[in-house]
Length: 159
Image 1 (cartoon, rainbow, N blue to C red):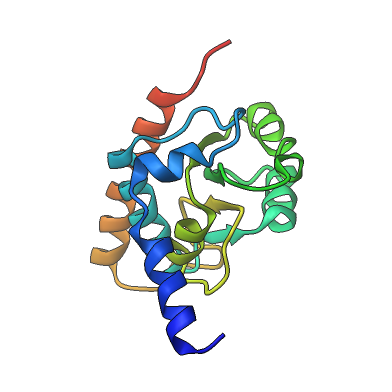
Image 2: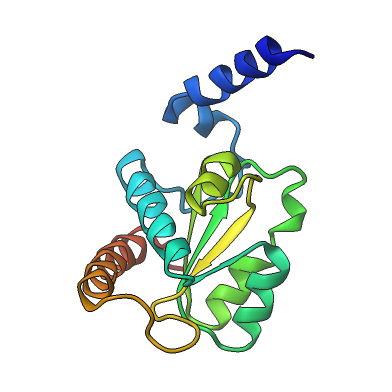
């Protein structure tokens, strides 16, 4: 397991296109973001992570949702076993929080500026404590957030 082996596995992981990643998703991963929406969600997650407007991991996300925190919940569709995540969409629907699945936990972790794969994220509309950062950056984030929120809402399955 030298450097060349590690480099080869990284190339294989990065080489997958959207359709290949989609094949590894669980059956219950609906609504699944299309390729264009995935890129927008990942970009928004990156901005939110830089501004500290993010909750990552099942435990943190569930805790935030139970405290009636609003935002956009992003779930990875290729989690195994999927039972780890199955309760989160129900909590999201109870609290009227938008949620969407993306095909890859590795990409979701990278978008959240983490070295580890992430199973779920909660992107918050406002910073946790006060308003840090400049106003132009905050306005740009707010625009990106509202655009993604609209697209996630339109992708939502209505029962």
